[in-house]
Amino acid sequence: MSLPEVAFALLAAIAVVTAIASLLVRELVHTILWIAVFFVDLAAVYFLLDAPFLGVLQLGVYAGAVTILLLFGVMVTRKRIFSREAATGIGPVPTVLAVLTVIFLATTFGELPSGEVAIRSYDPSTLSVNLFGPNSPWLLLLGLIMLAAVSGAIYLVREGRE
Amino acid sequence: MTSLEPTGFVALSGALLGIGLFGILTRRNFVLLLISIEIATNAAILNFVYFAAFAPSAPLGISGQSIAVVLVGFAATEVAVGLAIVLALNRAKGTINVGEVTELRL
Image (cartoon, rainbow over all chains, first blue to last red; front, side, top):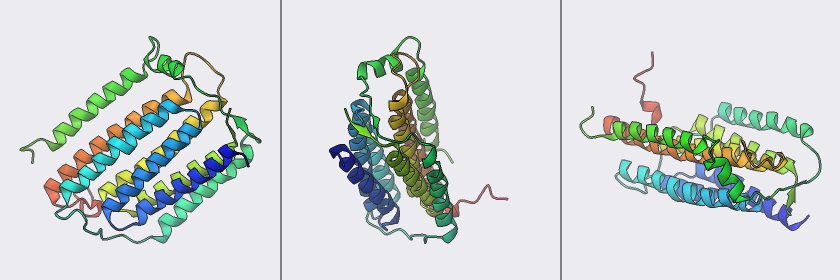
């Protein structure tokens, strides 16, 4: 195995373990700490894939903003921050459904191109032309949706609303 | 130049989607539901980033990475609205357990 393959295997194992741990630990704050590790781990996968812009975006938006937002949500809704959640059990039906989904996706492995694929390094300036260029609506679309979402969020939490 | 096999990436994103789905179906706490949705979204973003390597290098147009950037923005927006719902739910009901919010149930 080459070095990138070993690195990817390690990062993938950490991602799966931290994702499972974040859903199975009983304290909500521990859940958020595990999910922060998960986000940082995925950022490392993006760096491995020669996608540095997305790696930094993942670190800033997910590991930074989303984690803090979730912590804030826990902080303002609990009397004691380290109070245990009445954990709902691992029901048989959801587990079977999740495993079936993974098996269904695994059946597509035969359709994938075999052999290693060279990861084309993606120039961030090309990406910025894709995102900001005169013919691309992506950033405008994202901005409009964020504006609508912020208006909705402010409406939901404003004072005096019953 | 790095080269990696597609099987590992599809296996990882499939596993993450399964974990997210499991969390969405079993957890009742709203914050845990949001986290499960984030895990499933990240599985999709990982696929977009990896399969961008297959596309011909077009200088303009849609690419996997630009879709991934937009998706990261969408996910952050979704968490912000989710947090607003958590706050509103906590103020109205005193709980963020979605099993106890049954007003719309017939």
